[in-house]
Length: 116
Image 1 (tube, rainbow, N blue to C red):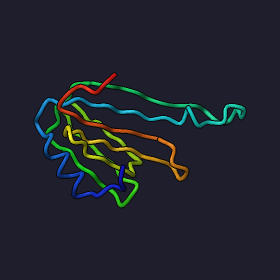
Image 2 (cartoon, rainbow, N blue to C red; image 1 turned 30 degrees about the horizontal axis):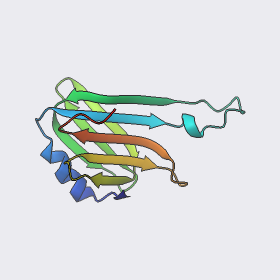
Image 3 (cartoon, rainbow, N blue to C red; image 1 turned 30 degrees about the vertical axis):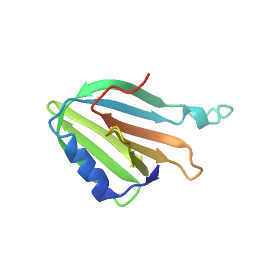
Image 4 (tube, rainbow, N blue to C red; image 1 turned 60 degrees about the vertical axis):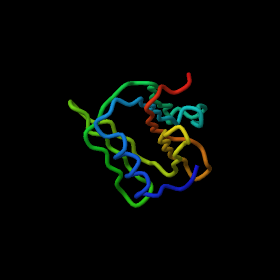
């Protein structure tokens, strides 16, 4: 993956507008939380191969970045994004890594289902 280039990511988001696409969205601190301290709470969310269509997709911020996808009846939103990749298959992969390189958030879009 490479550091986010906002213009490249925006162009990729625009290529998915008003099309049925597959979404992967994941957040986590669970794998990296220190469970021996009661004050630390492990949290995470995971969704894979949800079929969505969005009429507006926007990347904002100066880094880390935010991406919002406006659905007919709501939003999909990811914050803390730092890196991206455009695959030869046309997938847009976005990830947010912490200072130590650990994954904190991922948002991925594809015209075809992601591998399970």
